[in-house]
Amino acid sequence: MSLSIEDLPAWARLNNVSFSGVKVTKTEGKGYGVFAQNDMIAAEGCLDTPVMFTVPRDLTLNTTTIDEYAKEDKNFKQLLEALAEHRSTRTDILLFLLIQTARTRASSKNHLSVGVSNPWTEYSRFLPEVVLVPTEWTEDERLLLRGTSLESAVNAKISALDSEFEVVREASGDIPSYHELLWEHHTVSFQDWIRLDAIYRSRCLQLPRSGESMVPCIDMINHSAAPSAYYDENSNDQVLLLLRPGTSISQGDEVTISYGDAKSAAEMLFSYGFIDSNSTADSLVLPLRPFPDDPLAKAKLVAFGEAPKVHVARENGTIRWDSRFAHLMCVNEEDGLEFRVLQDTDGGRQLRVFWRDEDVTDQTANFADLGETHPFPEVMQLRVVTVVLECIQTQLERLESCQPSDTVSSSLREDCSKAGILLRQIEAKLLKDAIEVLEKERDSLMEAENVVAYLGSMETAELDLVGEEASNEADDFS
Ligand SMILES: C[S@@+](CC[C@H](N)C(=O)[O-])C[C@H]1O[C@@H](n2cnc3c(N)ncnc32)[C@H](O)[C@@H]1O
Image (cartoon, rainbow, N blue to C red; front, side, top):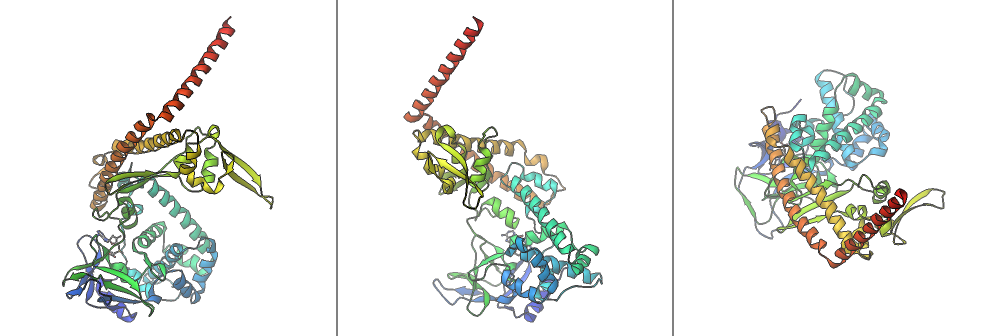
């Protein structure tokens, strides 16, 4: 199935990809990588820096080029049409690569091959068999993620992939030649869909002109916190790999790019299967669940329109947190929140949200500001701080209740163990520091005049209620 990387230069020549002073070879622990064969230098501010790869744009994979391939392949065109409502750059590329995989396997078993060969039929054989992103981890390896922000994200992704694959299986099963190629000859399985999703996530790039794309050869470049190269598109329909201005590399050095320095450790692990502590943002995102006894919980979720989350980040040494849903979660009817179902002109029904009699349906993400119009804004803030604090404390308890030593065993791949343990350490530290900040914020809000007055009035109201109940009971007994 796989092709030796020694065959890449021949593939490149055949498809008009030029390599200049670089070579793709095996690295130590990172799969393949790109290495300089000459010394190269680009002065600071230089506009004309050395070009290391030139790739014709029609070799890239994105929705536009996939539509071009579909024009030459009626079965593939039919498949895209059958899945029209699910189309995105990602699903187009996954489908395209799934068909290349099936065709390669079918031809290796001498089954009838369906479709037209293209440069990617061969190139896909240089792609790795396994990418160690957590969706490719075994169940035991995934135990390392228990209590981390990736635990629910990875589970949700695997079930989303499962549903997607079922849709693909059904749509392709209705196309006779694909029915035979994919399902009668068992050339592909759910495991391939998981692998192709991992391949896509770890190799897709954001090109300045063509947008989200996979680019052959440029996708062989590894990440570094101190990258020596960058990619670009020129006006001659080419994608280029260039030396960064102000950089010099020596023969034998690895050429690297940056996969982004704003990504958290969890995002890096999720998308690329490794964490580079030198270039990750110290941040995490947790799911937030509405109060189980809130009668308005469902309406709040519908009106909010996205998954409720808590964001925590350390920026320049300071912990910042944010949860737009927590602000909506913490207001009730007594505060002035109201949901109304209104009939629109077409006879349809619409859920509208009102805050203190003003229609704020389009501002449900903005309750942090809307809460300011409450007579006790500090009370609103105290509720939010308490909710976020509880969410973070629960997460830390879960993280600490399952120690890696309970899960690390010889059956786990070393890279997965290392990455899982590192993620746990990074997130535990951030959660602990966030708890400290939130506890301070809570304590200072508890002392605010407004809050003391509010809590006092609540206490009096409660005492009155107890008094009333007691006198009713006394009446009963009398
Ligand atoms: C775009 S590909 C780069 C080429 C890849 N090494 C290959 O063998 O095809 C991205 C993948 O390379 C690996 N990788 C890239 N940079 C890395 C790094 N700094 N440390 C560890 N692995 C890295 C990860 O497996 C990642 O998912």
